[in-house]
Length: 315
Image (tube, rainbow, N blue to C red; front, side):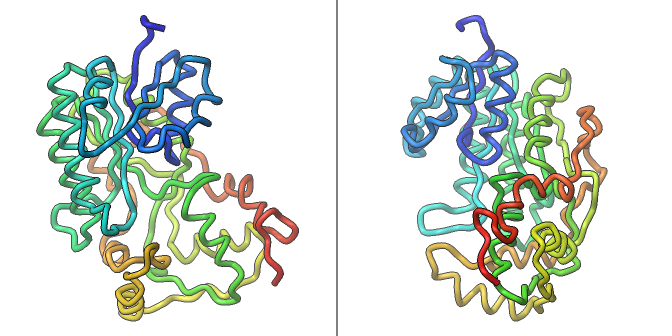
């Protein structure tokens, strides 16, 4: 195992991470995964050859163990991100400070390549704290370490996602109000994102580059929710909620430990530019990947919400 390439994957136990671990171990990588709860991530070892996955403690107050892992790594991948803030986790710390520290450690220890996962819409002038913090994380990573590659996906979908599954669960209601009904995005399969990251590692002379990746279709928020309802066989009224009402509602409910469907910051995102590939950066085509159609693929996991399915509720 000592002669195999090593990848340290921050966020390796998350939604996207598990697919990357699977892909890299198939290519004979040894994967080191820093995590706050190693005992809860044992499932990662079951999807890879014995000895190819190592879990280590991750503590944002002490990067010593992570630096040790990085010092032995050929590649470092940062997947850490949050969708909303709480008292302990802030966008600036997660999306900006962590990639700042990790990219400096990559430079210090001579890593071959640093892959940083960002998001389409990352913008220093955005009204959204999420998007501004994402841009700062990109900026610091590229400035600190010349061998950084940025991956910006649109909305990522798959069996464990928090998008198609969330709206399927909301199908218990006869009416589903949508904020940003006409907001467009380019949903992409989690398997394609994982493939894109692995390809970005393998491609030479792409250091300092940004890839914006999306699926083959551009679809509005409202139409996507309608498609989800159609997939699970539920006839529901999908209507537009005025942005002003959504912002007032999200502000009132922001005191909850887990916020409602949309936070105020997410409302800001929906009021800005569409979440689609801009064609100002490299794209998934530059990685020689033909992305799958999410609308066709989601039938494979949303069947659980149909009548009689695992999570189906009586109408």
